[in-house]
Length: 76
Image 1: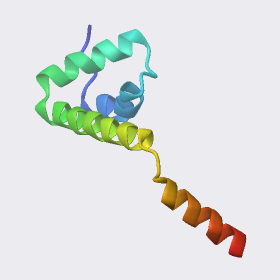
Image 2 (image 1 turned 120 degrees about the vertical axis):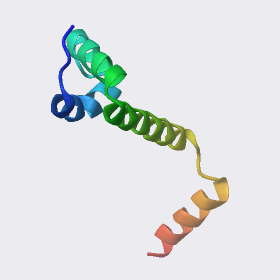
Image 3 (image 1 turned 135 degrees about the horizontal axis):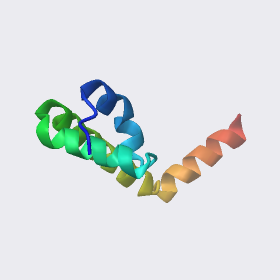
Image 4 (image 1 turned 120 degrees about the horizontal axis):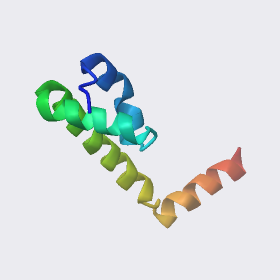
């Protein structure tokens, strides 16, 4: 495994978070963030943000909001 460097790690971070990288690229990024605290922090922030977005997408709107939107559309 080789250290891919900060520029490469940061450029591929989003793809890494979405599981869109080849195994070797994932390993290279994981090795890099173990030894580079700024990139490690960026990865942590990205993971937290991704988790928040995923959880927000799982929430459903209250039925009253749905009714209000439909009524508003009918009045348009």
